[in-house]
Image 1 (tube, rainbow, N blue to C red):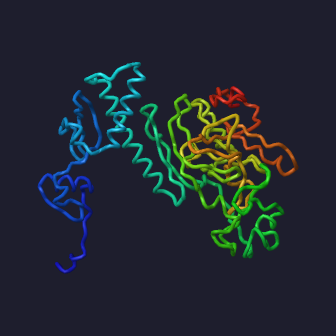
Image 2: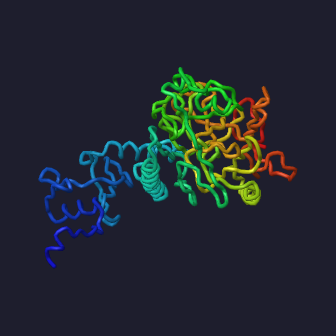
Image 3: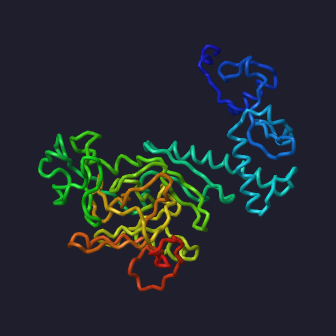
Length: 408
């Protein structure tokens, strides 16, 4: 029997950090854990809790309980980032309390706030790492809250593709194009032409058709490769974005960390696909909460709605603006059912790094032609645009000069 146990492995109940702490506690060097004679006596600072005159800091040590916190002089600390974060948090709190000078000793309420902020930063970092582990998107998601103590949203699951509700089926496309160069030499008009529509993108992947016209991308049955210029939305988010806490009462928002060129794809609106009947039922609940997560898929009929309240991607956090920098397009890739388009956001203008991303929750497409009259793109409270039912008015806080004062 013993020979059968040679490959037997049992998962360790301790974390990597806990094992490192144990090594240092008992003076054991371990190459696999990165503990050697040079760092055996080093201890990692988890966060700083307090400050005293003569530059003494109360340190919370990583892997040790708070009862083991100790006062250390500045010269012993090699954690520059943690020191900067501590002072950033302290100065913001002193400004909030309208204190003009730094006290020699911090009172208990300020210390409590600093510890809460340090713990919140750890929680948000774990959430940030989780979000980035979920998908193959080129861009990275960052999370930041320097405004209050709000953590990751509860009852929300991050997803990268539609979650299809009960009784709803997506009809996959049965054929694909045979092009070798879909942009310059499309056979039979490629996927867009086969559907009697225009090719949507230029060679840089920027949308070149009017809002209201559909986009038909190449699909998994097409002969073209992943670098085909008619594969844009399906490649996912290409920019690093930051989910941040707004300081004007609008909750979370999203800003770009990179420059985004005009007419460039930014993100999809992803959530749970439900029927309009179910959307109406949920809408009554969301009305009372002042929530706006129902996006009608009304390209041809008002049969389905995307609900991003509990399942969604980063678009869940994008705020409304009466002068938005994102525009909605209906996109078809693997599914050709016109009742179930994918909702894609493209930049309406050049967007600078650090600028917040927004779209108009009550966007209307000018009826330039018969095709564009199909799409209203209402992001509604009830999921039923044009419904005669009384709707709750929500005050708009976008702050632009052209603000309509109310969302609906």
